Image 1 (tube, rainbow, N blue to C red):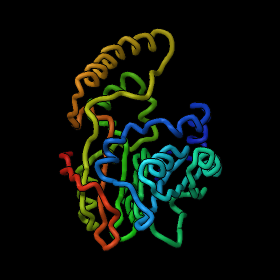
Image 2 (image 1 turned 180 degrees about the vertical axis):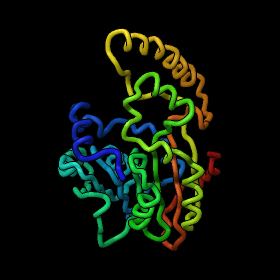
Image 3 (image 1 turned 45 degrees about the vertical axis):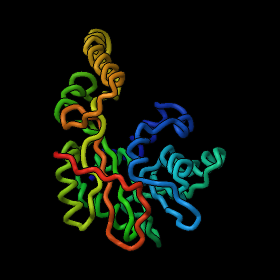
Length: 267
């Protein structure tokens, strides 16, 4: 079951403005990607699939930075425009406009990724299995989703409670994912929180309510600045904004990784 539908995402991108302006922006996850992936070459191409790929920023990044052959899947009609947008930036991409739960390609992929996708589904084990059904032997699963639990939960309850809607908080537990992946025979390279502290999502309300939230936001912004200037890197369950999973399916066709290995973080 999903907490969001096609209309939700179409409206979200219409509110945010032109989706194309996001394509070449930094992802914010470059250190994580560089840790686990190296550049492909013609002798060993890597096919990369992103589930929920609109507007195409991650397709652009993995094509440009790693030379991967990129494929995308999304159910919003605007996703059909992504190949044209990326072609104008020198990136070739193949994008399918279809529902993830009805997508049945006649092939597998070396990397299957999704960013901010799995947390919208209560039936997350089924969502995981559908990711894995698309992954080649030796392939790499790459998932990112937000952490809205613990301290992050209360910040959002106070500053913008509406953003909690459409998200299943029970999916935001690295321990559950680690158990599920190991039970399915995958090797965990990373399963845990990412970054130290960040709040994103804006402020809700009008008038006095918004003013009060703006006052509460000031120490949050100050904390973010201090952490950034001091380069504090302490992933934790309470305030880390993201959860990352990198897991490899055993097999003979493993895409070359950088060799760095991180231990699974505690839930």
